[in-house]
Amino acid sequence: MYAVEVTNLSRRFGEFTAVDNISLKVKTGSIYGFLGPNGSGKSTTIRMLCGLLTPTAGSGTILGLDIAKNTEAIKHKIGYMSQKFSLYDDLTVIENLNFYAGMYSLPRVNGKQRIQEMLALAGLENRQHQLAANLSGGFKQRLALGCAILHNPPILFLDEPTGGVDPKSRRMFWDIIYNLSQQGTTIMVTTHFMDEAEHCDEIGFIYNGKLIATGPPSQLKTALPGTLLEIPNSKPMELLTTIQTKQLPHLDLYPFGAMLHVLVTPDNIQAYTALRAKIIAPSLEDVFVYLVKTHREEDLA
Amino acid sequence: MITMDNVTKTFDHTIAVNGVSLNIKAGEIFGLVGPDGAGKTTIIRMLTGILTPTSGELSVLGATNPEKVKHRLGYVPQRFSLYGDLTVMENIRFIGSLYGETTKKINMLATQILDFSKLLPFKDRYAANLSGGMKQKLALAAGLMHRPTLFFLDEPTTGVDPVSRREFWQMLYQLNKDGTTIVVSTPYMDEADLCTKIAFMHNGRLVSCAPPEELRQSYPYKVFELCTPDRNIKTRLGASVILDINSFGEKYHLITANIPNAITEVTDAITTATIPITALNEISPTLEDVFVALASEVN
Image (cartoon, rainbow over all chains, first blue to last red; front, side):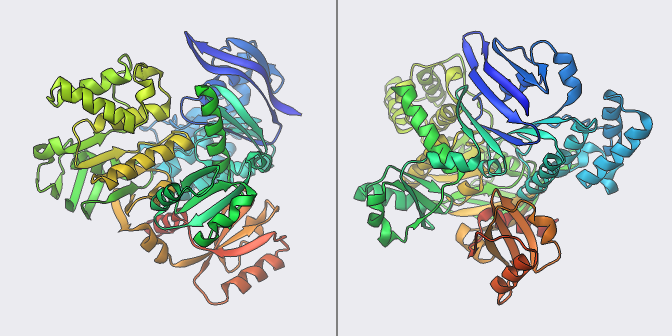
């Protein structure tokens, strides 16, 4: 059963094609990670799925509703949260929640109980009367999420929800997302932190408006040709230059935190033994380095 | 090259930067890391002379007012601030002319810098039609037109694709090798690892300031990496020797106190909770682990 199904979706703004012929499906109750650099078309796609923007071409359904025709019905059934948390800074935590409860026309009694649940979910029980403006980034983010899911939407769109939030809050946020997903909510999330993508059941990677890879993380990782080596080094950039100068054989070579990652054909592994190289399983970041490079070369060709 | 002594900056009722003292030496790639609102941008703006501290002393290239040494400073702001309706080359030449160079010199330098930033093939493209990664390279190129000795970059790689991000850092590394001191802020922890020294900011305060290797060594816990297909380990490992669990897909970082026999205790806890183990190893903490610990201490 699919909560989202779109076929050949495109959106042009004048001469510019923001979204180019995208087809994708999102299983009900799964976490779908929509990844790609800024300007690649992630937000435009999400806006079309939410019924906020009409597609130039293509068609699709959300929860069985047509994204071009049933836009009003869709808006009642979805939750949406973006990096620009849409909270009222000059209202308190509880006032923000009450306001959203009113917007969604929640019945008064159920609404009260639901607001309490959201306070607990965001860890804001003791901060109900604090102004939203005075909350830290992590609390703001969780309050914005609480406001976005007050009406119990079966599907939730999160557009870069963790941009600019500290690592600890990022993790707390993902714990909440996991719980929502386990309770049956379908979640579509965009991020440019690749480690967060590892949490998703399914990934779609978008680049220059095109969906260039889809699949579960484990499947995407098999796309990488050759063997991936990791060399720990406190000066990865210098080691990179050394390897280039020595012309050690490699398919690709790039820094990865305090490591250097080298992609080699299996017969060239031994060239790196002296450098204490270790064979590792690729992360999604490695996969996307590879995908972006191959597609960029295609673009130039 | 830079000293800050107990510098504070307040805006109305917000304390953006709170009593920060630090030194940046010539030849460094100095990284400012921390969440939004930690004070990174405010520090960069004070060091470039755009903002004046509310209290405290600072000195940049020997001047207490950075405005006086402006011609030696380069600055790439967080938001792209070049002209979308000018081409790559036109933007670069325009910036060059602002610094009063001769046309001949501007042309020579522009070609050289666009070549360095790999933008020469795109020199006739309108800036508005560049990808995010290329826009950032153009901003970097523009910041280099007057050949600064001290170069500030405010989150230059946020939202940029993983390949452009790495190319950008290779350029920074090259500039640094050629003698430019670099001060750069970033939300990506893997980039923090490429700095010679990292200042970790939290709520306007400087929480720590050290080379990445030193930060890792001073980490007070042990980290074990567990690989398991089990997705629900957090609740089951709740009350055990494990203090914290961070998930990375099928990998989990289990944090324990720095105790002897930690590996045995962790293995016991996992076995008792009947969680299947695909692999379990002690690993050295990532910078992200370090910052999670530092941020928790502050809170």
